[in-house]
Amino acid sequence: MSSLFPALTGGSAAARPALRFGDRSLTYAELASAAGALAPRLRDAGRVAVWATPALETAVAVVAALQTGVPVVPLNPRSGEGELGHILADSSPSLVLAAAGDRLPPALDALARTDVDAHATGPAAEAAGADPAAPALVVYTSGTTGPPKGAVIPRRAVSSTLDALADAWGWTGDDVLVHGLPLFHVHGLVLGVLGPLRRGGAVRHLGRFSTEGVARELADGATMLFGVPTMYHRIAEALPGDPGLAAALGGARLLVSGSAALPVHDHERIAAATGRRVVERYGMTETLMITSVRADGEARAGTVGVPLPGVDVRLVEEDGTVIGGYDTDGTPVGSTGGERVGEIQVRGPNLFSGYLNRPDADAAAFTGDGWFRTGDVAVRDGDGYVRIVGRKATDLIKSGGYKIGAGEIENALLEHAAVREAAVTGEPDADLGERIVAWVVPQGPAGSALGTELADHVAARLAPHKRPRTVRFLEALPRNDMGKIMKRALRHD
Image (tube, rainbow, N blue to C red; front, side, top):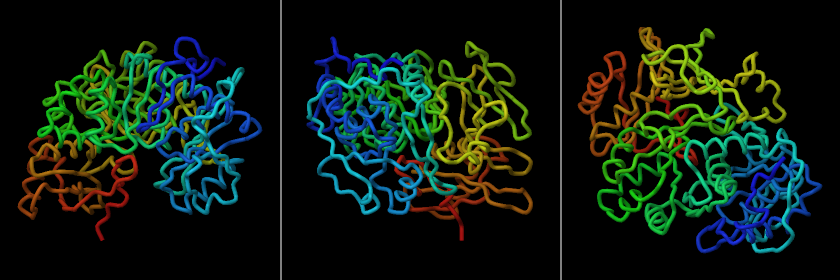
């Protein structure tokens, strides 16, 4: 197999910037040298854990392991002792890689430690002959329904996803990516670090996201911004009083949002202020990337575009009826448009190999003919654009004989001037089966009159059967590290 990172082999890219974290940076030659110095200490390792702080050392550690053919288990530095203990027992890494100054928690005491020197020198390591099916990463899911599961991501999934995104986004070695995403998830690590390195471009990591940092880097030559909806919401809020931020965003080649749906209201505010539309893409740990709005296509708010090259996608109803798919050139086939909601199922080289030590979970995740059940539900527009309406387990509400996606109700609520944040769930109802419940963070004082006004707003904007039957006001919505709303924490006692 050819290298995941051709630019590390030298040549014209050697002097080009590769990584910058704050005021610390590495060229491609320096990254190859640092990874090469670390590689001999990894060759006999079965798996290695990486203490995934937003720092040069994390990138060097991951590159060194991948170049050596050793699978990486990224560790979230904010994980609790119990979660870390479970991940270490399940994945059995032979050592942990960390920056010399990092203090590791007691859960890692029994594991051999190797400090990473981002400025060490050594011969470039090359993973010649590595099997495309060989594991590259073991990334643990969020564990919302039990202990986190380790998704084994093969090398072919990394390379195929990044190459498909290059096709969709026109991503080249001339691009400079800026982001402030954590490096223990697919978004920040695979797309946000390995993506630029595979293209021969550069990444500038903000360390901690700020609108000031985004404006500074985009004004200083960065061409692409990756973020999650929480980040873009903060950008939208800051734009009216920050013409420099608006100008910087307007000069970017590509603004990409992922990890959760970006509310239509924020889409429109950013477009109005900057003249640039945010591109959404869709994926998950087990699949890497599945669909995206193309850079040369229409950036349509509320959709995640079309399947990436090489990825098969279909929508399937609960009884197994396939209501929509795509042929080999991406043309939609089957049912299109309308209100038919189906689960997204996926096949392709982007898929994970399975869950580590969990054949039971593998059996539940895949159909008999090899399609992966994402658990996400969507509708498909007539031209093939996918609109995700939520998770099957938490966002598909069956009320009064209708199947209703929570996402479209949330977008409608966010269009109201009195709503800062919103989430929608279903609760058991003796008459309707489930009633629609809206959880709202208001812009100001709230009461029963506002609740009625918001319910009427949704009914008028969408349809009467999508009206929230209950509106509850909160000071904040519960979110995880990636900004996703944790709906299972929304319970009325």
